Image 1 (spheres, rainbow, N blue to C red):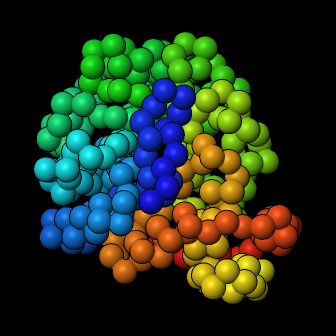
Image 2 (tube, rainbow, N blue to C red):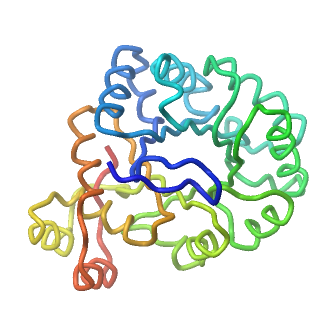
Image 3 (cartoon, helix red, strand yellow):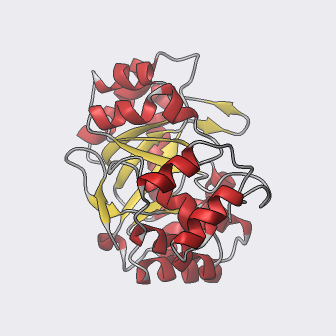
Length: 276
C-alpha cells in the first residue's frame, strides 16, 4: 500500500483510509472486527470515526476492533455535531474528548477534528480548545471539517491545521472549486475526502467506465484514482461494512491516470456511484 503524509509533520498513513461510519449499520462487533482486520491485512492504517456516529457506539466498535493493533494505525475522531445541532463551545469540547477516549479505550486520539464550525461560537474559541487538548496530550493533531479557506486560515494562524475533511468526489467538487484543496496543499495540511464515491445510484457512468476499462480496473477504482490524482496531500476515506469491497478500494492506489484520463473525468458531470 502506498502511503501519504497526514499534514506537515504528521504521520504517514495509507493513501486510502477507512471511513468507519458504515460499520454502525450492523452494530455487530464481529462484523466490525472482520472489516477492520481485513483492512489492516490490505495495508490500511488510517481509520476515521466520530462521537456522533450512532451516538458514540461507533467509537466503541472501532476501539474494540483495533485493540492489539492500535500502535499500527492512525485513528481520527471528531467533535462538534450533537444530534441535529452543532456545539463547538470549549466546555463541550473539553468533556467530549474524555468521553471519546473512554469509548475508544485509549488515552490519545491521533487526529481530532472540529466536525462543523459552530456559528454561535467564535472559531478561535473552538480551535483554541482543540489546541489545548494537544498541549494536554489527549490529542496529537487537530483538523477541521467542511470549512472555507478563510476559516482554515483563521484556525491555522492559531495552531497548525493538520487536515481538512470535506465531502469530495467526481460528483461533488465544491472543495476543489472553492480552493480548499489548494489551501491545504499550500499550507502543509492533508485533505481528507469523505463520501469519495458519491451519493446515488450507478447511472450515467460512461466516462468513468471508459477510463476504468482502459486500465482494466473497476469504476470505483477509477473514481478513487481521480481523487488521489488531485494531489499527494489528498487521502480519501471510503466507507464500507463489506470486506469484499476493501480490495477494490485499496487497488485504486496502484492506478496511474493519464492526462487524457483526467480530462475525460474532470470535464463532465457524472451521476453517481453509490457509497458502499
